[in-house]
Image 1 (cartoon, helix red, strand yellow):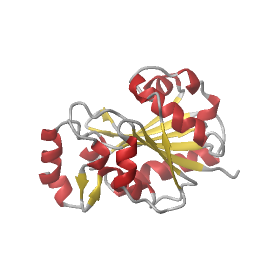
Image 2: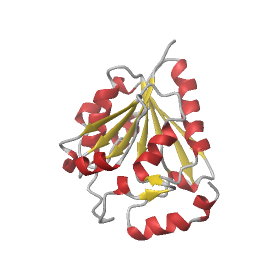
Image 3: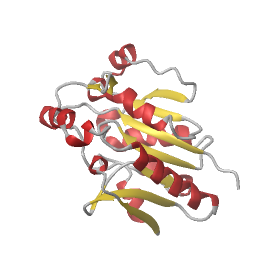
Image 4: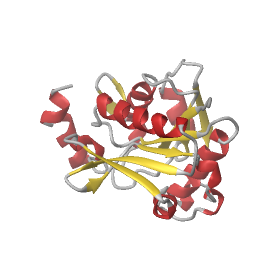
Length: 208
């Protein structure tokens, strides 16, 4: 069966602990947001939906993403938590996609081969049809990102609330595939200035 897979980059948060908009942090010659989008552009996604909220106008002025597959949306309810941003992205994706790759803006250390592995595993299951499922990478028994969410429209994502993101949806699934990886980047988020500085000098980053 023909299927369509989109991607959602969640970048609407207030960056309170960082004290600066995380999407605009410098990363490998670009910004954190552009880096994450560029990682996803390597995949055959139908679209990449970027969800902005806090300081969205300033962020839009400072980023340059020309690929026609990228669609930037503003979530006006971003202050209500991660779920509001996720719902905004899923509402857009639901117009044409059977599945989505969920990516957080503040996990830039994820290796591109890990992203591709999650994507390809999800696409194989998606082609078989069936019930909603998730594919998620793990590192040292910790669940990470990105998350591939298949047949998400069969789930009641419209009632998500709070700051948990897709976790309540995943907990409802019968099929939750966990892929063990040695990629520490799947769990390393840059939430604070200290974490950001460590990531910049991290041995993982140096190998890229």
